[in-house]
Image: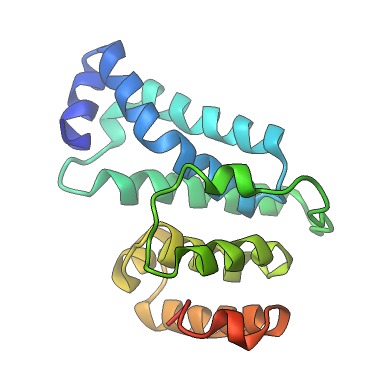
Length: 183
């Protein structure tokens, strides 16, 4: 059943439709929050639950002419942006656990998926805007136009952020590992 049909059923109080939608998006959103919010499982779980509570509380805010995945990642982006505002100076460095367990459940996104996974394990040290565009482009496979809509900036800005994010990543990852991964 398509996401927009599930949202229609959710707005009518259908619990099974909500469970199906939650199952489809929970891992992807958790991974996004985990990367964007400093690698803290508890915080990521809190944000994940808050996201789905918003869907339960106000399903009517979803416009079925808009792809659900873009809509839900727009919500996630705005939640992260609000969190950054709350943290006046972000000094959290990820020193916690290995994130391999979150990568294992993902479907391969390219023929070089192992290299992509390696690159994603290294992005924790990047700036927030760099992490965000890399995750949306290469992990979630959104187009430049879709990312621009999610982040509410121009396509040129997204292209620029991707360029600088790649430069940032290349500074912490050997070129032989990156070659062909983020092209």
